[in-house]
Image (cartoon, rainbow, N blue to C red; front, top):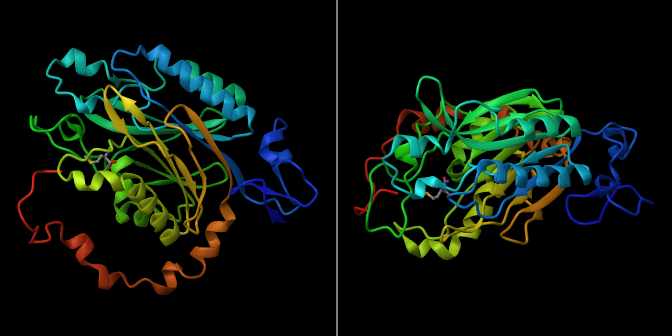
Length: 348
Ligand code: CDT
């Protein structure tokens, strides 16, 4: 086989177009050899800004348009961003319960999101959707749900690393009140889906090596990550110019060090006056960015993801069974407070 037609797209000798661009015939038309490779066409469905007062139906219409566009181009899995249904409301101090509740979903699918589930099942396309979840017993999570091509809910991941602060900090140009509105979820799980081993993470999770390693130890082959990343980082604005660099750095490192594909999907652009990173990207187990968004708007980024490529790394340089020495790493789980945090700084 040769690789051409753009990174991440594999075509056989003699083929003139990437398989996913003529994939209306489904899986069999995407098989590029007789060896039944474990390949899945994945679409990162980047979103541009969502206004604070945007009706849910209007946002869902945008998701449907991305979903249909991705299906038309042969995608089997469409990954939407973190908190895809609303503006990034943790930038606001919201004291009124009814106002806050309006940003949360109490069921999934609910009356306004069912159309997305129905259309995805009709098209035979799976998806991951990030949203704010309010459980029947009153817990609030920053959640991502993974849905298989037949409409079955595979998993409900609740964000573990909840960043920002819980109390209003008036010195900031805008708030990051995730710690006021969300509890941390219970942990990282993998699930068999889309022909491989799939795990989810959300935004700030992607900066922590533990996220990928805990998934990697469970054999993950495809990590799906939605994010909302304001480019201005108030506790240390010197980091602003590195926002894009850090985004790629952490996801590429996580991919390579665990031999997994990583799909990072932004809600980017200027949302209610706050500029957020776009740069959605799909990263191979070698840590290479194989497809990347070029706008800050609604945009599809597709790649043909060969899950077997994970094993090039999992079997060799990152053969955990052979080379890891967990007893040398005990501090990672025994110690949360490193003792010295350096000069006093505001909460991050
Ligand atoms: N949504 C989210 O987790 N955003 C954070 C912003 C920086 S921490 C305040 C992120 O890690 O991208």
